[in-house]
Amino acid sequence: MIPRSKIGRFVTDTKASVALIAAFAFFAMIMAAGAAFDYASAIRQKAELQAAADAAAIAGAKEIPLAISNPAQVELVASNYARTNLGMGTNKPQSSGESDDGAAMRMASSDFMMAAAAAEDDGADSGISKGGSSTSIDAAFIEADNAVEVKIDAPRKSYFGNFLPSRYQTINVLARAQVMGMGKVCVLGLMDSRLLAGIHLDNSAALSAAECGVYSNSTSFASIRADADSSITAETICAAGGYWAQSSSSFEPAPTTDCPPIPDPLSDRPAPPVSSCAAIDLVIDDEETSLKPGTYCGGISIIDEARVTLEPGVYVIKDGPLVVAESAELIGSYVGFYLTGNDSVFNFAPDTTIDLGAPRDGPLAGLLFMEDRSVSGTRIHRIQSNNARQLLGTIYLPKSVLQIDANAPVADQSAYTAIVALRLWLKEGPTLVLNSDYSATDVPVPSAISGGRVILTQ
Image (tube, rainbow, N blue to C red; front, side, top):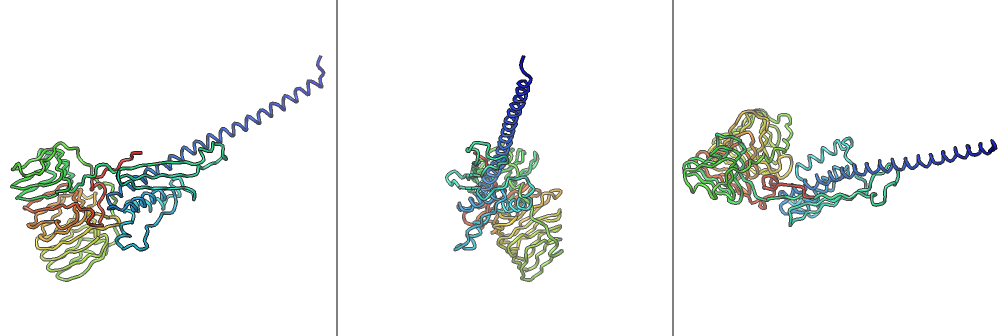
């Protein structure tokens, strides 16, 4: 028989062993749980960094057509986009020794600036991973491929110590975005109709877009129509439906039919803010004056022999027309018009002088005219002016017809003019010249208008 004292010692020793084993097991479970939690956290952090890199690469690639051979601007936009999304301070453009034009060329695009401001406003609560001082962001413009690469290296966040191997202590992500297909778009008729032409020329009208494309989304058999000795000359002519002309020589080259419709390339461009009224029902009659940017409620009428010079900025034309009539003149560089309200259309009469260029930065960068997408009904904007030879920028009228019926060339002295409208109608025999010499101006070209389609390739 075993003595009770030995049995007691055995029981006591067993309890101690079990406790020791349990302690080791508990510690191992804690380590495993910590490692699993840190691993899951690392996966989540990498996904957030990858999303930031992807967005930054896309933002930089969208800047390529606007940068006009300025790699520094492309890289600055991409880098600052990533830094903003990661809660880091942005880098500023180089300014020492630069001219005003050079500094402007290095400014970030309006889309980036608005996104950056929004991210800075609510970044603390957005759930976006914040970068630390040791986070490294490298943006590179690969000019030969029209691509932008963004690399982000960041220390892994650890909540339970360094349970993971050393190779997991730094997170590295890479994104590459490329602009595919650099064909230029000078006209896009957005109308999706089986009955009406998206682009219609009449009475010996001529549309010249020799180095860019003309597109119509109408599925009509006469999606692009040239009546009465009218003609279109372009690099590409493409119709979602068919085309019709009285003469086989009306198109050069012959249009391609059954093209896939092109979605509105400017549909994501945010509208500029609408402030309180700077003036109501403004009429300028037979005087020389200047106007400042602001909201003009009830519209603006410039009549008789008035001469109006616009200071650079955004002019909101609200609930009324922009009318230039009789022998009046409207002149302005780096100006953009936002037309909001059902009555906000522009009308430039035959004997007027119109000389306008779009902004190079701000909410309407590159847009000479932008229409409120919420307006109802189909409206008509008219250019009858026989001296409207400088219309630099993009005319964006997604809900309206742009009717041109001047007797002299229109827009022929502009470095570039692009038109995105519901429908383009050259009615009374005008000659519309759409140049696309983007390098001849510092007014940016929206990336979708320049024909580039940005895709992630890595």
